[in-house]
Image (tube, rainbow, N blue to C red; front, side, top):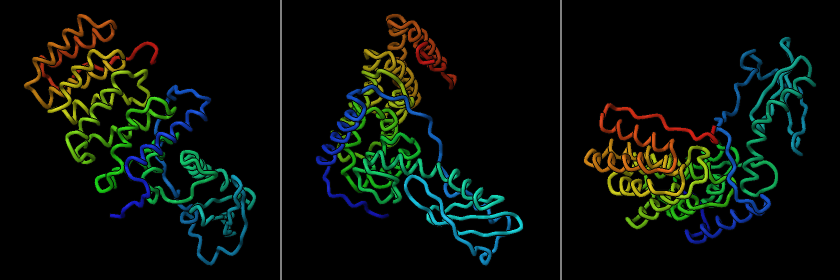
Length: 332
């Protein structure tokens, strides 16, 4: 396994991450309101080479052309055949076909745009000008952490995968990952936090001590406690991680406390997460059901009172399913 190079220790990485968040807030006009991220769209590149379908031979690529995009010029190899004019741009591993050279180049430019937009999004997230043409796997830890905040959620997921690959051997990541969960200012924080929660499903792999585990759990609790929205289903996922992946030591007590959270979004997450706690720790069923019954009687939100009552009934029946999570009217 390759080792990521880094010139920053854990403390410096957190400090640089906080500076990155400061700059994002400034660029957002001082607003710390969270943006609702788009759904993740998986990126596949390069596309299938169209010349393969027409059996274009190596000897057919005799011409040259070029096209311009986003300030760069791309050289194109050209093959003129009875099936049309084919062009391939080796720098971006892409081909197109047209009836004329001009049509082929226009199509090549147009269908290359998803790659260009991804490269530009990475560049913006890394605070670099223009297209990023390197490999995400070669980036240092601080840049991988920045990419968790990328507006393109598939890029953020690629960065998450790289962090997962290296975090067990490079301990610089853990404090910064907790800082991401504790972030209340970056406009793109929700998708970044979702990525961290996905990593923390295997929390012991990222921690060196019980104290570090507790710090991560407290950050998850904080995310639930004061949640102002559930963009990217991040707060929901925090409850799932605590209840379904950390149920024995932390999940039950933490989620029981979160039933009293000031955030209705957070209380909904806690109700759902407690169902998973009981799945893994049946001995807690009576305590969890009693707590949910209290919520069903006392919560200020009618929707949550009904949800808690339904969940308590599901746990008592133990029939393997639970009530669907409710949606608040302003979330629809």
